[in-house]
Length: 145
Image (cartoon, rainbow, N blue to C red; front, side):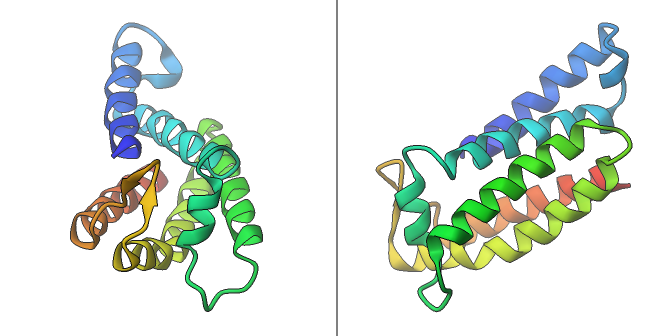
């Protein structure tokens, strides 16, 4: 739920900053890109901090080197967040993040079906998680156009 809160609150705050004269955030799309950058920074950093072991456990067992996959996806999330901030790379970063979200979704399915925890709490059940994933995908797609 933290990523959704970051996305919504980040968009509202960025949009307000744009309306108050921050020209780089003036418009719904630049504000959305800033909010997505915030969200992906938070989720990317989580790949390297206290929740790392839980994220490694989320990787489906059929995939090799779960630790490297978590490291790689964390780096890609952080790179995507940086790319969203720069107007020249914004569209490419958003498209790359769509692909990354789709590639990581099986880990969310595995986590939900296995009853894993994240931050000491049960992961989001599969149906709500699928809805959240659709929201994140739609936000990235909107940022790409």
